[in-house]
Structure formats: structure tokens, C-alpha cells
Length: 448
Image 1 (cartoon, rainbow, N blue to C red):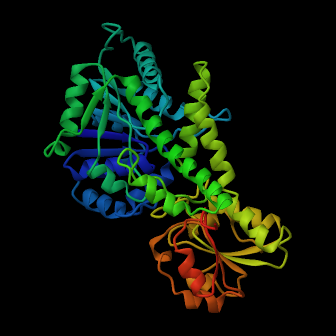
Image 2 (cartoon, rainbow, N blue to C red; image 1 turned 135 degrees about the vertical axis):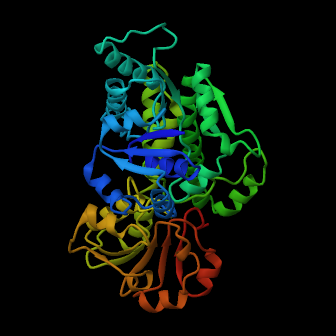
Image 3 (cartoon, rainbow, N blue to C red; image 1 turned 45 degrees about the vertical axis):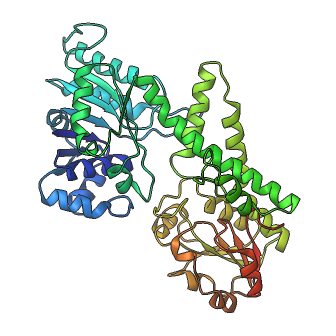
């Protein structure tokens, strides 16, 4: 099948590369020539484990190409998959200007039937905006709709992505479910054919109306974020009452109705999805006169949780941190990515700097991105590895749960720090074990 993916960012590149891997003929379009130049020269503009290899093999096989030519991309694909960014607007709503612009370009250049797929995370009602934008461009060209149900020459489908950064290739190739929002049989047949390779073991396709599909993506992320904030709030209570949140997690996670996923207490969630999607869903509720009170609380709890490590540090060392130096392990918002959007590390570092402290930071993937954000500054230094970050620091702060941080050499930690103190924002270690080594330990919800 010939497929065009519009937008060569995180979702677009992963989707395009994986669809090419299945044997499809894929063109990825982006209006940013710098990004396309990187891809055409063998590079990858984002960090995602395994993605570079998939791209290279399919480019070599002739199944994957990259272009800035809109007319070429529209002419190519029966499926026109919109995977552009939907950043938060000032009011928290999803900014759909890039989605609508992509739809208009399709309408300007299409000369035969197209299935236009909203792959970007978009609010309820976006498919209607896409349909209207395409139809407006067609009408400018003198093409009129045959009926109100199906415009001539195109169908609009919602096909939200459920990819986790750091595991996106695996998520695409082994999906739990494939949600298809479509309302005409021709489009449903095309989507069935495109996803047929995933149907051999069992039926993963869930076909529903478009608005339900649009809401499903936001609802999924909202549920996961809610579980995280719920556990973080319980962790803070556990500290007050003298309980251990890890024992609580195991106790409730063993209930099959609850399960263990997304029940880990920590120092708050970040990234490009949860914060943005929570705000966008709240905005949708407000537009329809229905404030989503639970989600408001989820966001409030998460905002506060990002400051918990700072609070622990200032309780231990005082609010004036001039002359203090800290080692920071982990900069990305989660392991497996270099994404620092709304990362807790930024709150921690900026809070330490504001109090006069200096930081030496290390992350296996996000060092380049950190330099891009903060540049070179007197109160931030960059270590080549986790051990070097420790040298002469007053304490170690762990923000991201990279595997490489889970079994460190504790004797090295003790010898390189000025004093053996760890602030563990991800509860990587057992407090009793660390304290038995002579290390002062501060976890999340584990200080009872």
C-alpha cells in the first residue's frame, strides 16, 4: 500500500518506518528542510531506541523516502496520515493549526480518493475540522460534495497512536489495540488492509465512531496520569503516617481489579503527552460546560510533586544552598528517551540554582538536549558518566530511573561524595539496605 505520513517528528517517523517495515511504500513529509536533510543524509533527528536501524534498512530497500514536496506527498499515498504536532495553546487547548494546514494541503493537491488519517493526538471534533478544511479547498477548485455523509474523493479517519517513548517500535509492532474511528465502509476496508499484518494472531482492531476514537486517546493518558498522581499523593501521606508506599503498592497492585501498572510513586510525570493531554482534555470539558474536577486535581498534584525533591533537599541542607554542590543522575523525563519537555529534572535544577547551588548532571541520552536548553553556565557542569558526576558533591539526586542507575557501586558513591547522602526520586533502592551501608537515604513515601 502507498502511504504518506505528514510530519516527521516522533509519531510520524516511528509510524512511517514501521509501516515501511511491513512492506508498504511510504513517503514521510515535513515542511522543515533541516529535518529532511538530516534524514536523507542517514541521520535521525530524534532519539528512540531501534528507530535508526529500522529507518536505514527500509531506506536501503526503497520502501521509505523523505521529502518536503507537498504535491509529491499528496499524489503518493492512498492513505494520508497526519502526524504533526499539537502543542498546548495559552489556554491549555490543543493547537490544531498544523493539523488543519496539513488537511488544507491535501485538499489543494489531491486528484483521487484519499483516506485522511488523524494520527496526531487531537481533541474531540478535530475530524470535523479536517473534513471542513479539505472540503473548503476542494470547493475552491470547483469540486462539490456528492452528499453530506461522504465528500467526493476522501474519507476522514481517527487512528490515535499509543506509543511510549523509549519503547515505540515495540509498541507499534505489538499493539494492545488499534483504534479506528471511521464512519464509511470504504475507509474501514482500507484501514483493515493496512493493519492486516497485526491481525493474524487475534483481532486487535477496534472500530468505532470518530468522536469516540478521538476521546479514547485522551482518556487513556488521563487514566495513566491519574494513577501516577494518586500514588504520589498516597506516598506523601505514607511519609506523614509512617508507612512505606512500596508495601502499599504491592498490597493494592495484587488486586486484579487494580494491577501494578503505573502505580509507582516518584517525583512527578513529564514529557510531551501527559501534561499536554491533561490540559487539552480539561479544556474540552470547559468548552462543553463540564469542568473535569478529577483531572484538575491530577495536574495540581503532579505540579506539587515535582517540587518534593527540592523540599527534601532544603529540609536537609537549609533553604540557602550557596556553596553546596549536587550530583544529578537523570535529565530526561523518563528512561529510553532524550525528551526533557516538562521533565522534573528541570524543576530540580532550576530550584537548586535559585537557592545558590551548583549541579553536575549526567544522563545516558539527554546531555545534548540539556546543553540545547541551558547552554554553558557557571552553575551547571556536565559529566561524561555517572561516577564522574559524583565527585565532591554534597549529595546525589536521582531523577530518572535509567537501568544503569539501578545497581550502582555504592562504595564509589560513598567515596566520591563529600557526605553519603542520596535523594532518590524514583525509589530505586531499598532504604534499609542503603542505610546499612552507611548512606543517608531519602526516597519518596519511604521515610516512615
